[in-house]
Amino acid sequence: MDQHSVAGVDWAAGEWVAVVFQSGSYSECALEDSFEALWEIVPDLDHVLIDVPIGLPENEETLSNREELDSLARMVTGRSSSVFPVPSRKACEGAYNGDSYEKVSETNRDEIGKGLSRQSYHISSGIAEIDSFLQANNSARETVAESHPEVCFRGFLGRQLQHSKQTAAGVGERLEALDGHLDAPETVFRDLCKEFIGKSSDVAVDDVVDALGLR
Image (cartoon, rainbow, N blue to C red; front, side, top):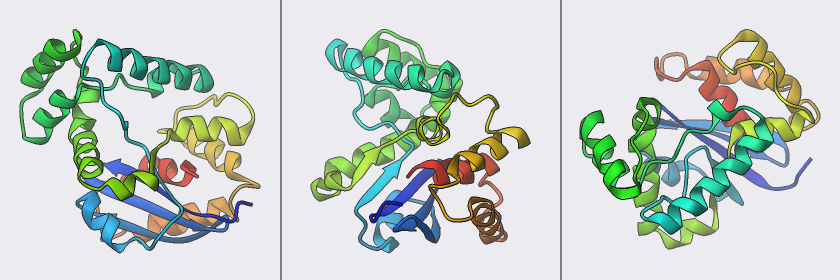
């Protein structure tokens, strides 16, 4: 077990889910409408690992760097669909400001020569929120880092994942991966799901699983 304090953070349909671990054990969870609000209530931590891209492409050079990073993540997971192409900074800003999918996709094409999938469009506003927060808060850059739950689960399990996280088998597989890395992962998962009763109807099971895996 590590001796650090860590929060796994996932963006869930416009809300931010945080699961906090202290010395390898579950400590608390939080749910906020903005990352800034989440940052204010989460105690001082060694690391905040977030399932949102950090470092957005703006030109050919930064696009190449981003694609290299994403390619490595796909190689580790063996699941190419689990890593979405990252939109450009201006495309994310447009999505955050309410631009339509068509307009955001056009902006992305103008910026980095590629259209945008609807999956990427739906997470673009969350990406823009983190990007803006980190640009305005230099000190947070020492704590907040991009992570990927599927990469983490692959490392914990020691083999490729076989099932989608949106299936019962996939949830079970990922909880199995946490054995030895988190005290009583099945109990923690159950308690987290109970925590969100009445707090949000939009947090999905896979959002909870992802936040648990960011460790």
